Image (cartoon, rainbow, N blue to C red):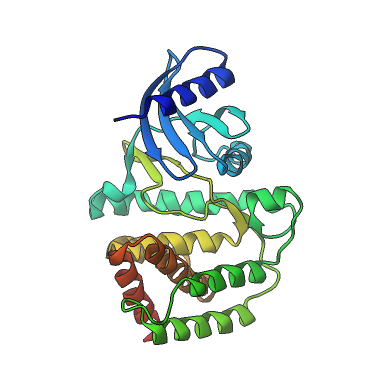
Length: 288
């Protein structure tokens, strides 16, 4: 059952932001430190999010509005809570492979459209960048890789220690060869087909921008590739490889980084299938 106290809290925040009475339709998700709920303001259904990560999403969505990017629109904001439009549609992940094949080019184009939102300084979390904190793109990637590696203990029965060491060596070599003049732009940082919403035969929008960063646009593409590989979507992967063929070497480095990063995430949250699947995908890369 929905926690009445939580509903009352959301209703109070939403009323404070919108300056009118609202009704809470349902609590979509309760995390350790955030809440996502559907509300109605008497005219339309909206999404309200609360928690410490909301400022990053607010900054991202505000930036996206300047380039008319397909994403939710901010309706109101106060510290710790934001209200945005609700994208009513279906997740592209739920489509059949043939239907996904038809819509996936729109997702590729959306990721590339983000290149219009150039970083004001360097790379990193959107909040850090907004506060003037600077970190080089290579250093950011090193932080991601080192953090992931620290969460993958060699004495764990479900982790192939040799595979992880070889993966880190491959990434280290790739980072040494990575150009230093890459244009850094806004990234979603978790582009997967669950976050891509379809309306009829077109991409309605991309949701959940709380992890937004500034970096190389191919880093988002590599995350999407990981999702397609996990789904064994051969047809869509064919389109993907055609899309990135001129930058394949750089994309391959990011793909391996993503596999390692999400292997650690799956391990952290006990997602055994993801742990097994990502190690299989890493083994395929290293065997080439």
